[in-house]
Image (cartoon, rainbow, N blue to C red; front, side, top):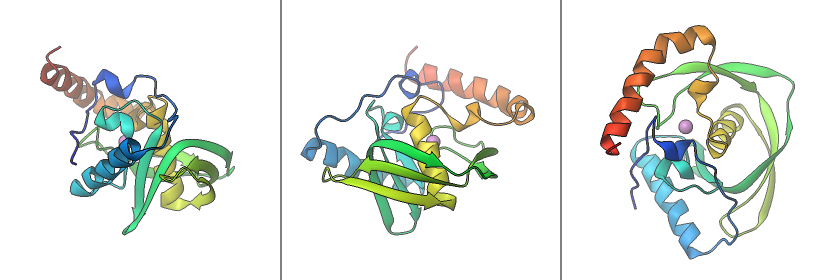
Length: 170
Ligand code: CO
């Protein structure tokens, strides 16, 4: 199932996301649909609120063919070392800016079978997990870019929000 991607300005991206209480076929079906949607638009990650579902889960494919389905993630530890890297977001099309984030981290989550997984991630995997986890807190990468960069895209963001609200009939 291909979902519609919610864009900047859609309140669903800022709403509170609930823990997944029961990992059943409905949840697995949503996760499969999220993977399909992410691949359809060549993304490397997609969080549930981006498809209008306020649950704490996301999918990441930071290496081609390696998909991680992540439910109720907890970040246990971050590296002290941070790196600046350009990011984009399927919900904020057309904007790419640098964001500073820890280079590696340790995370614990449930997979689609309800099993607890603990992993150490680095580079693109660590970055994608942090970006997607921010979505679960209602945070978008453009909230985290440097003030100078933010000024450069502020007009684009205002227009994007207007377009989104118009589409939603608000
Ligand atoms: Co995003």
